[in-house]
Image (cartoon, rainbow, N blue to C red; front, top):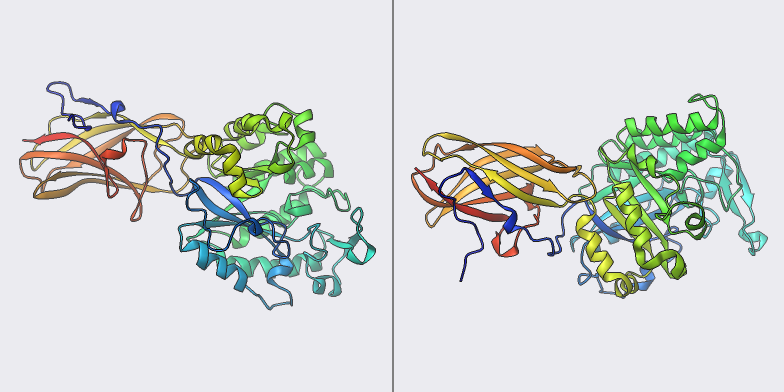
Length: 467
């Protein structure tokens, strides 16, 4: 039977690694992939966790990176200064122990919850408006805060500070998206008062998150900046268009990422391009330095001539350079309907690394050797977290690391060449296997290489003679 690894070529220094590639294996890697809405519209509404049976942790559904938790202010701080994290703690314990991570949105206005902003904030004197949703009785009026009111913002700052104290830099939290402004936290006032706000108010909410979440990626919704466009003149610019552009640049300069709720909304599908994105260039400002998250709308309600077997969704993910993608609905129903698409995009979301070529001169015991490794990223986006690239030689009686580089971001756009300074100082002459691994701490990062080459985080690349 032929070995899968390559033998060292007799003459040239170049080893072609492309025959080792595997673009079919599903690779579950950190900080990328699919997520499910586990808390939607606050804790008071059971969707969509009510579709998941007790004891079912969806472990047979591939490439689910995290659970998205959309939490209302009143869920966590029902009384001023008294925080109840118990429900969220149980979710972290239950699902985190099974390999899942989490993302958050903290909302202050929801349609399912009349008091997403706690009632005690209004009673403290914060300004706001009662809104009668269609077909809802007056006693269930929803209170929409004035998002620029000083009392509201002072109370909100205390809440965000408490959230950050608990979750900023938490190893299980992938990102927080800015949701304290607007209906459902989406950055607009539709299904609410319809009131317009200037970029100055929107900046207050963004700055509030950035002040406290200093060690966690923050994402901003495209509707957030569109609201600045509608809000007109601000300190950012003379009119709404200028304000929106300047606010977008301001947020991108803070190192924030971007998000869109939601793809394949019927009105957007009729008005905008095939990908249904209202503003594709918006994402170009963000994706090079921080993740993009794209969310499909409630898929059970999308007409067949809108969802089109998910091709518009795919185009939106590609155009926005998405790292994460999610959907509203029962995850098992989603996978039953769209499993091939979900698996196809799972590898492509975020980074997806191939090895193409290794330039390796003669290796001599006791000396250093300069090598070059060509890496290709066929994913949609960069890796935003630093990884460590390592090489080692292995024989029956020796395992010796010859290269390690911390903090590598191995390119994103096509191919990139890495210079490797291999150190054979402690390697005796002889025949070895050359192995490569990519790690986040102790966690291996999977590469698009044949699975039979893989063992405990390391991939066999070729045979190596050390002279």
